[in-house]
Length: 403
Ligand code: GLU
Image (tube, rainbow, N blue to C red; front, top):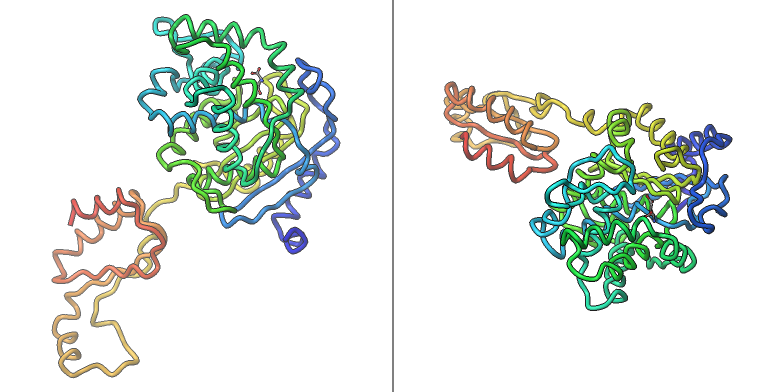
């Protein structure tokens, strides 16, 4: 598969970006535990996975590293599916903090953590994962992450040990959460679970498949397995958009315009909904904790290919491919004289709209307005939907209301 893809434009593009940025040595690897400090800082991989499951990879895309904070949105999604949004939202908010990822800041009165992407919110979220023991609960997390990646993932034992031995700040946060009943029992098992989830090993390719699963509205594009429900994907991508890149999230969404999450292991995953998943692995981090080359790759791709998600929203006017009255329809088939006569007398009162593309709320609003205007002059309206790819449920309700 890879050989067949090597000559394709996207592959060449990733290789070119990789070559252009390869020499950049800006940033420092995370050094709060020895295992991360010892990582080869020059490692550099890029991967992009399309929604029909094509995998493009460049550089060290098969090298294992720990997922760290990229785990946070995934566990948030699992908590949403296990507990429902109302319970989850009682334990964690969805507001950006503007503070560092490990800041000890909770909402003043409730003690609720600000969002699931900072450590306080992530620990509270992990605390919601069901199961009788830590082992059982971790198994659920691991199965969930593995379904996203489309292969069985495992945990790096040494990283887990170090995280657990040195994670005093996270321990303080967890006990504070317990004080406000955001964790409802002994915080140590929840903390243990959080350290384990951060220590799961992935490759850059895995992260791109995970991102593509989110881009594909919850179904893994390679295995076809539905990992998360569409409603929850929406919530997860929202918090990634507003809080996914530490306290650089505002600038990120302004410049790059893709929901994303980074981790101190050097990984970044970014999602272009409905199009593809992208991941970069490069361990040198900037002062916010984001991979320096990771940001550069995403910026370059977004700039050159107009990937900003708000660019994807096009006007609805081209959804009407053609409009004519039925008297203008010619046919190679011989028509019955009766039909011929009918078309002759009534054809010009029948308006045909050939529609194309997706009927979403915006495009359907445009079509309904056009059709309502035509109703006065026509006795019959024909909507030719042969070239319509998708009809959004909400949009179909709109057309029912109006016509
Ligand atoms: N294990 C790290 C911590 O909780 C994760 C940090 C990160 O990737 O942001 O401190």
